[in-house]
Image 1 (cartoon, helix red, strand yellow):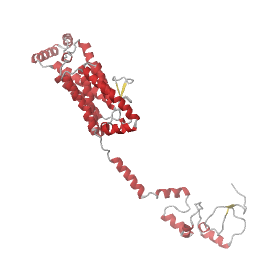
Image 2 (tube, rainbow, N blue to C red):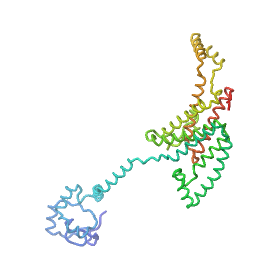
Image 3 (cartoon, rainbow, N blue to C red):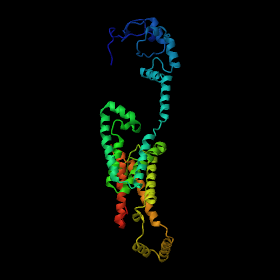
Image 4 (cartoon, rainbow, N blue to C red):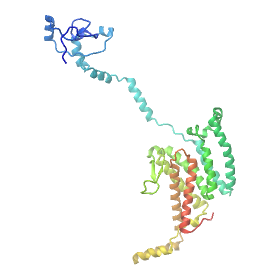
Length: 395
């Protein structure tokens, strides 16, 4: 766009005449007039290099007084600072931003990185875990002394009738909340201080299994709640950072993607293994050593008809070797069938214990879901054996 030559067009911004090499004036001529230029101006335009004009903020009077002459600033700033005064404004801002990194900002970033590297102290919840696991020993004593489960349910129901109103009052009264946490706060988690106390769900779960399941299965489910959950939590806090977290879900039935069990990704593989191993030890110790009340169901024997059918399909020499092996096992009287039954039971109880402890069922507390789910799965396993073999337990 070409503007008409007119001396009336002027740029009405304050400027520094000495910087751009123009005579002292309050305004910069926008378009040169056709008047003849002075000899000094013509001589200066021939010998001085071309200058690029840039718009900068008006400097203060003190900085303007200390600024060097135009001839020196054009060359020295361009070589020393790496950005000439005539360079575009965006480049100079970028240069100033890159050079504005202060030691304080660097130290702040270093301290933040150091805080991330420092591991948070582990809350082992020793008083809570002690109370949690002691219920298992109390249950074992009651089972060994032939305690009546109805009496236990009655006592737990009375305790529940006292704890529930106290917990409601704790959530509604700040004064009672202060007194309650002053006395029993060391047994509570931080997440429970603004929600329902976990002891309530614990008692409800124990009452349910004692009222619904057979006594031995109810006892084992309380053991899993008391000891497998404690082992999974403790080992997960100790070794969880060295193992990967659990997946969000696993298939309930292999190769069936639409039936999946939701797991808690916040829990680790170390805790899952600890809970599973504890479940195996509980099942083998209780039914295999302490009270073998289900040996009739756990003593597996191959049917004679099945053995005969397998021998008929094998070659004569191989069938003869199989027959001699079966006779040798019978002659030694080794309890192979019982070992197989206990091994199968331990594997099932271990998987049930680990998976039930790792389930993520939303707002449901694991103190409620763990004994109910584990006891129900173990009872279903024995019902399946009873259906397939026709044997029953001597409970």
